[in-house]
Image (cartoon, rainbow, N blue to C red; front, side, top):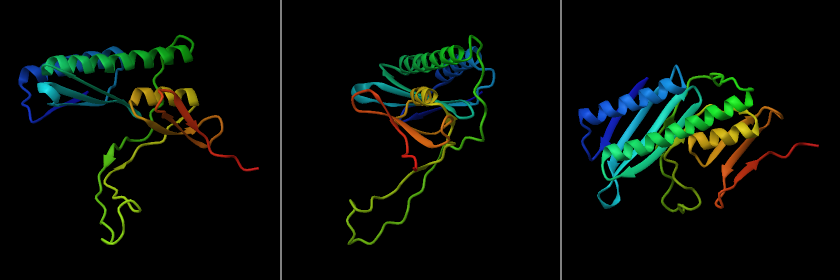
Length: 193
């Protein structure tokens, strides 16, 4: 598994990099034989704390994200790694429950292309910004085909607020999202008569 460790406004020493690589390799070998990559980013947080963000590409189409802060880099990383491991444990349990006690990996889709950032040319200055907001980022992802319950599971694993998916039951594109009150919303297109 490829592991990148970087720091924003802080130095990451060899001991921290070794600790990060050992822990993430241990998590990867425990749950998946072929984990792809992980990017660990350390930065300065509020009140002299250190933040740690992990984005792990476990397999094609499965991205785990976690974030934590602590009084030093090791504590921040350990908290984030615990969150990632908890997400993987939950994911494997759901797979085992769904497949009758046997764990099977999700079918690998096409290559994962994380994000392409594009700054588009601004419009005329007399146009109000509220009518035409500036688009600064474009995210490219594969749209998974799954059931609604699996889409909710992927939403939780990816630690995002919304997920577009192709409903395996109806063949239509649907979306699940986290609502402000903590519940999950489901958007399904209206079917033609």
